[in-house]
Amino acid sequence: MSNGRGLSRGDKRRNARLSQLRRVLPREHAVLAVDLADDKQVFALTDHDSRVLARRTVRCRPWQLGEVIAWGQAAAVAAGFTGVTLACEPTGHRWKVVDELAAAAGVVLVCVQPLLVHRAREAEDFTRDKSDDKDALLIARLATQLHVYLPERADATWSRLRHLGARRAEWITHGGAARQQLRDLLECAWPAALTAAGKPLDSLTWKAAMSVTACDPARVRTLGLAGLTEAVRAELPRWGTHRIHRPILAALHAAASDRQGVSLQRPGALERAAFALADLHHAHTQRTQVEALMVSVLDELDLTGLVTSIPGLSAVSAAAILAETGDLTRFDTGRAVVKHAGLCPRENASGSYTGKTTISGRGRPLLRVAAWRAVWGGLRHNPVLAARHAHLTSRTTNPLSDAQARVAVAGSLLRQLFMVVTTRTTWNADIAAGTRDPRTEVTAPAA
Image 1 (cartoon, rainbow, N blue to C red):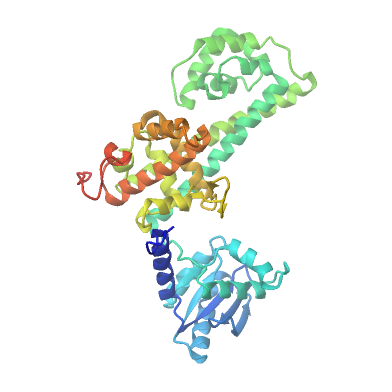
Image 2: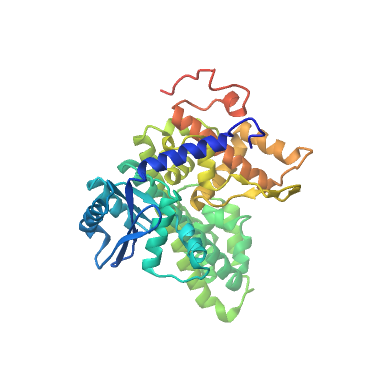
């Protein structure tokens, strides 16, 4: 809000963004909009008043569209324009193929958010009518109104980190599903096994013991406590440790005589539980391998030392965040990164009414998740983040709940990471806490 003192910071940033978009969408260019699909591509060539100059539908794969882009350039010149700008929805990976073809032809590609196209359908004629031809026209119209963005064009290293981050997220999901399934099956068939440890699904000794016995209490009884101990001792290295917690084995051996559970379900449920435990181990192994590769990419980018200078932020957590943000130097400010994550607060006010402020939730979901997970370590080891969390939850005016404060701290962590990476300087507690101005103070560059 400017309060009568001229343009606000938001106004200036918005004007700068619109000027940048206008440079790639000049009025001297026609707009070639394409509705991408698997093997049917629908094109609409329009002017800046959304008048359709030409249409074309082709049956081909996205990587075969080079000839159609050339057709759009020729049609635009024939209609009196100096060139053409290509616009599309970022559909899967298809738009990346089209972007490469457009760059080879000297054409700039811009993207329109699918949500905008979805909302524009009803605004067009007050119906929810949908067709490929209509969608192509809507994409063109949104492009002429500058409701577009310039897509990220990452290099090979950053692209690899993005794919590894997506792979890691998949294995976290698979591991969580196997973990929950294992708990549910044991609660049904052998609930006493879950009481053998305080947190059984986090105990390596417990999981190794369940693995060598195939989640079968009869095998536990057959082995006996001594046999179970020796079998677990041989199994533990496969789970990443060598240390046995003997009280857990004793408790599990005692639980083997417990008959509680649904007796008719026990044989099948325990067999399935053994499969779930094997899935859990496989997911953990694959996740560990992917995380090692992600850290190696950070090493290649020469960022590992920088990001781990932030207390409480591990190399893996930082890699998960950077996999979603891409190269942070493409953002103007740390606030832009927070907005990209969907963690920025959104006002809900009109006149004298002031409603509840919530985060936008309109950014990258996996980036929000990665920042949220990183906060848990940050609050334990980062004094600046811990102090901010304590202030937000204990202030007298509008105190936040623990979860709300963690969301705010996640935004702070993203801003700190942005400054560390873009300035190539190690983390400084005084600057992070706001007691020292980075614009006037010089921080020693990282080695």
